[in-house]
Length: 103
DNA sequence: GATCTGACCACCG
DNA sequence: CCGGTGGCCAGAT
Image (cartoon, rainbow, N blue to C red):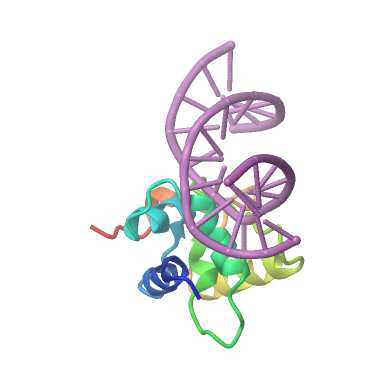
């Protein structure tokens, strides 16, 4: 496992319950501002044996953007709703209310 | 080491 | 608000 992926996993683990973070946000936190796509790539490659809150990562617009693993998009939504995250019309999360402020 | 690919994002119009 | 577009760069082949 590369150091970059390792950092990504660590930062994702910091996202508190009931909050979400964007891919780009995670990328910035690991010191790689332009690596939003790699965050998704890393999560797609994450074995289920590694327990991290991958479901708290959504697009910058508050939408679930899973494409690699079909069926997981629905699963992610269920997990988030179970944590209290609300989805509006069109399956969008109100980022102004639920985005994790890492400052 | 060139090329292709991708759970993205900011920026227009 | 919505869709298209270009840029981004670490892995995989």
